[in-house]
Length: 408
Ligand SMILES: Cc1cc2nc3c(=O)[nH]c(=O)nc-3n(C[C@H](O)[C@H](O)[C@H](O)COP(=O)(O)OP(=O)(O)OC[C@H]3O[C@@H](n4cnc5c(N)ncnc54)[C@H](O)[C@@H]3O)c2cc1C
Image (cartoon, rainbow, N blue to C red; front, side):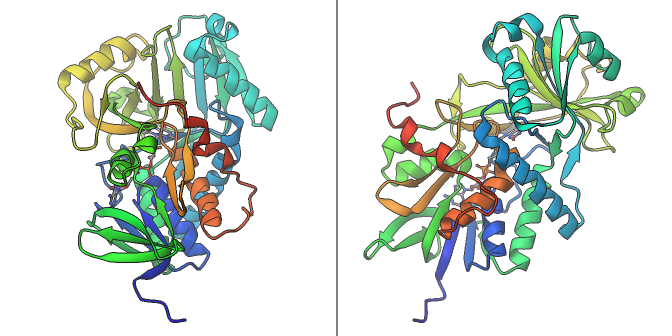
């Protein structure tokens, strides 16, 4: 049977971290595939901008993520070889917290213990350091003296905009079609439900399978589909990234070869926390730092994208000053971004009930980028009805576990 030129094996809605990875993987499997985005990714309107994302192999968030991040690292290296663009920089990664809080399994600090346990289970190269050991390796950190640090050799950062651009470029070169600057308005089953219609502002397409990777726009998308039960699982939270000038004297100390990515828990409150990166741009060397907030919810339309001078001053005063004595507090830039969060902070990757060929993919909650390339690989196999050649398992991300929980 001749199929219509507007019919695809698969359509991917949203071409950010997850959508670009899925489109790329589908294109590598020879599928006839269309990707649609309301903007022109990579862009700075969603969750995948800001120069760098942490990646680490021992995933304290849960063992089910470990095969995904390993696969992601392999894919980024393949893409680097194919495109000649650097995507992932291995810097080493340090996760530190007060020793007594780690020993007591206390709050956020327990993440250090869980990460060490994960590294041991999976045989991931690491060291456990005391404060003297951390100081000897990284004198840039001003410590209290009671810290314990997990140091992972193969951790580092990925360049999100470049990773998305590389996957889209290779996907297009290998036959994937894309439509950007075009918003999807809705999806609906056609006929007996074997086919899904995707309606955009200007056109309509059909596909055997549709993947929705709409990031922070997912709640709005589910609302338009009248899926308020699903919509209730997701909330969107503004997060801010700050880049503090290292100054010429300290530039070398914060370069990727000398400074690791880090995650630092230093107190009891959720806010007593920051993570950071070495300078990813040698022409403007900066210590990039951020924290997390889950209190104030927002939407992509309501998001306050500007970052005030007061916010940056507070970040420096409350977290950076005193912990990095070489950093004087001059901000080079700051950017707002969005986490899309589930109540248990885990991913949701599942077919919308009643529509088995409509896969909802939400891998944010602040830790999705490092897994995105591997997820794209697993999602492409699922969409095409194949077993994962890499043993990747999406079942832990089924929506069922959330069926009775929602955000207050
Ligand atoms: C500040 C910050 C720091 C982070 N740090 C880390 C980190 O260090 N390590 C880590 O692993 N993860 C991190 N994350 C999480 C990670 O970046 C996200 O999990 C990931 O980028 C989410 O990708 P996505 O594809 O779901 O969303 P996005 O990349 O935002 O893509 C969604 C896309 O869908 C499109 N879209 C939406 N609706 C429609 C529609 N109706 N029609 C057409 N197109 C549509 C949008 O335009 C957008 O391009 C961080 C996130 C933030 C915000």
